[in-house]
Image (spheres, rainbow, N blue to C red):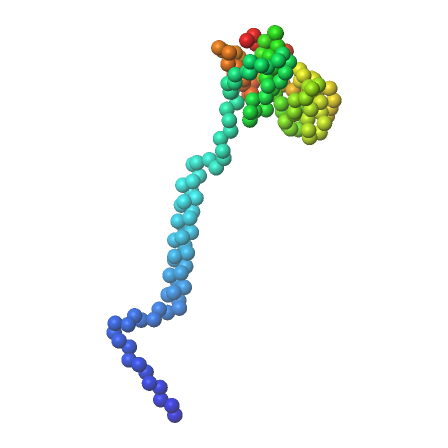
Length: 161
């Protein structure tokens, strides 16, 4: 027969934690962390997670060297501005077929996506675009042109500069 020597525990030694207590505390800590993350997520809800888009109305000064009938495309905008003896006007560069941005060329505008071609005044020369490029509302004040991309003007509307 073998005798086992049992070491006497000191009253200052901590009692070993039973397995069920350990699992219960782990579950409580996990639940607390879940509630904390949920609360942080709910606090972020009122703030939109999208970037603000630029204003539909913008001001631009036309270059002095802009020739009559030559398009001027402001950086970061899908608008072509023109100056001629009758006045100033703006044409949207968003293709009426599927919304691609058309590129100004020697004979008007050309859609790089599906090959639509437009005359310098926005009229469709070659499909598949169903409608002409829209003219945009323009106003001139003190040599500064204000363009409203959200307002369509009748085709041929020009503002004297």
